[in-house]
Image 1 (cartoon, rainbow, N blue to C red):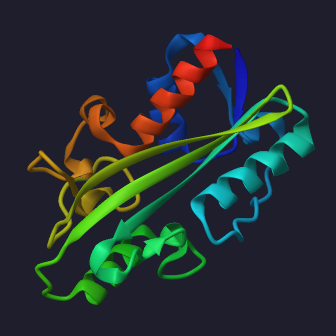
Image 2: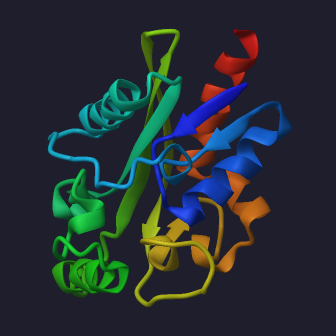
Image 3: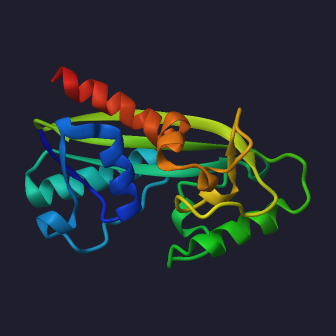
Length: 191
């Protein structure tokens, strides 16, 4: 099955390819000549994922899925949430985003957080949503060099290291994205 993944993020594409396996061929936005930024103007992850999938479907008429992920920190009333990628500005600077989180959290002991991924799939002109959540805590310092985004500061429950300290196979056993994509994969294998 050939699916368009509404992303040009090489880290995400590599991660998703490893999750979906050989039953699927993923095309990136670059592969189908969509090079402009897709607007992310909704106020919820579900809305952003759906709007991205619809944008790509309308431009390509191909089966497509899009995801949106947010880091939701309890002590910050769920921030950065839907604004995770642009938390410190429009340039999507991960280091600046992390520094803003550290600044806002300060010395608080309440560091509970969760990562939430929502996937919107358009298959045979029908829309579907899938969700994955992982809970954890925000570390006090950045640790690790693997992964991307907030991975250097997120420690999933039951683990002692951040996502950025894990290799991809280990991360994929617990991550929010892996949980959402497992639901997507199960659904696709039944169709």
